[in-house]
Image (cartoon, rainbow, N blue to C red):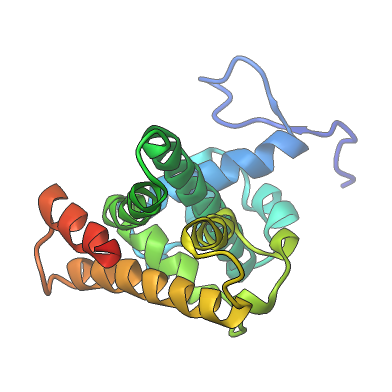
Amino acid sequence: MLEPKDNTVNINPTAAKKPYHHGDLRDALIEAGMAMLDHHTTQELSLRQLARNAGVSATAVYRHFPDKDSLLRALAAKGFAMMGDQQSQAATAAAATSKTATFAAVGAAYVRFALSHPALFRLMFASAPPRDLFSLPDHDISEPLRLLRANVTAIAPPNTPAETQKIIAIRAWSLVHGLATLALDNIIPLDDAIIEGVVGGLFK
């Protein structure tokens, strides 16, 4: 039987007031996947379960995500965008202080994001391709890395060589990523005072 030519798919038709268009369905599926990560590991995620949670057919899901890996990549990309938004807000709130305080606020936001979204945070870096991210142009990197580069440029003395700036960036990134990972692995407990003390201490 031929499928109807109508390009809409209903999500929970008994509750929804209007159907989702295909363009909206992809975003809705990503949001449903993000909600699943709040309660499940990436290993427990499945496209069929996503379809059930979103109230659509598995066929509708496969049109947007032909396999699980494509879904995980989309969720990771969404995670980096969310982290970037959270860090940008922290930078804006700290902008009236100093450049180093702004940098520290962005780093602390990184750690807090990881603690708020543990499964998503692990997925984001498990999905990252093995490459030197610092060698890529700005348009090929995520917002968190763009912020890291910008903050390093802001605090570095004039005419600081690019290789030195890279080392500063790696040092800062290693600190916040390591701190977040230690907490997520239940090796150390974290609260706001510890986060602020450790991250802020990088610039003292």
